[in-house]
Image (tube, rainbow, N blue to C red; front, side):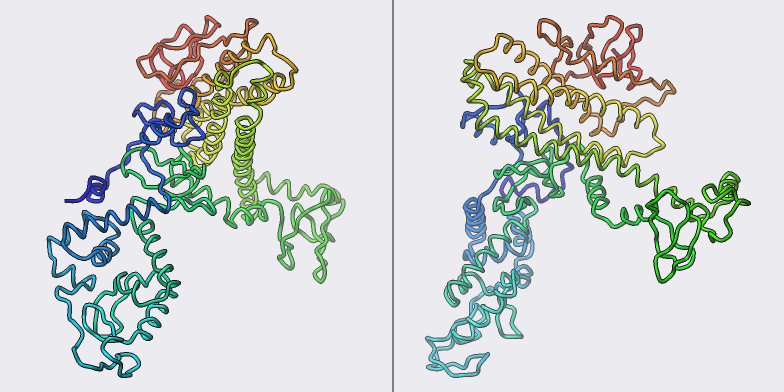
Length: 587
């Protein structure tokens, strides 16, 4: 009896990742800011159609209330119970209509007992006066109220009881009769009648939040200050969604959008970035404990003669941590402790020194990946600002300067959209690379090659869109070579898109295309990078920059007749070979 959307509650369907870039499932880009190439449109009807193809829906507060009311009405009609009772049932079963129906028709009596819905309502006594069960004062029958159980309480006690419960938080949604021995539920119908307007508003807000926070298919947008929620079709594909506030995030883990890197890797990376472990690594790598008082000391001068701060004032050698008083000509002089060097060569230096070296190496490795992760993040933020400026100001100016209609300048917006998305992908590939096992040399080589090719292509595209475009923005009139620039930028956009398609596809499949043979190809990154995206004298792109090709598509050719490019990994292979030396894909 459940609705089609609730059929998902009965099954945990494993998510099958759709191709974010090629759109093979027919879905558009998850992010309105990142509609690549031909998907970009200013027409509102196109945008509406695009959203209908997505695997998620953005819900405003009005939408949430509407969906909530429809679900309550549906359960109320099917089970022939009041709306307040249907609301209590849905709240208890996390707003799953199918589960409510299943449990109700399997054992109605057990469900009623669990949620506090009595089968028969007990009416108040017909006596002229009744005694309140809280304050024990006598009141006329008309001033008394009760839940379905019939236990009478005066209006003042009801207001105080409900107000206290509402002030305590969302627990008020599971309110029961004040009588300690009674479990009858107190529904929204009584809240609306017995309490103040302020408490009614709070209760309504808690109920609204419950529909989102207790519902396994809906989540709030995590952007600060955003009041939209996202309803997701579970098992339908990519978890990356974009809210109406323009914030992109992963619906599964609620972190910022991070495809193609999985949620577990992102969680580890974010924890590492915020953990104190890196502080300890820095202390281990850049300081040594005083041999006497054990306080960590950072060496800030060239001399090996270290004096601890008061009150310790112990003088020692930075190299061997021995007393400085023992250092003289017999140890090789004050600036070279050969006693330590000899011991180090013999492998006799202590465990703490070995740990310090390991910490230093670990810190350097982490710093390498973190700096590039953070740099691409800042570059993406700058690209977003440039995109906004281009859409709101510069595009109109360029249209006037170059005497071109804005509809013919969309290739510039497409380029910036590609840059923004590629910066996001590239940023997370550094988190992926940090956790890639060191012993898997072939995978690491393949990954670094793909990453390098993608990054090289992105830098060419970004420079063209940022610096070369500025020449035409600053021009006082139409320039003869603007069409050549159009061809170049559009070609670089296509080539860069192809690079990142290969990178995303490889990472999402766990780099499984890496062969197990001992044929370890040397990455000829320079040759392939130069061959793709270079501009000829006529302004054309030398490389054939087609869309993402499948395994059966013909290979792209380089101008250099001695090389052919693999469709899977873009590796530049010698013409004499028929199998890619990097991923062993057949030509």
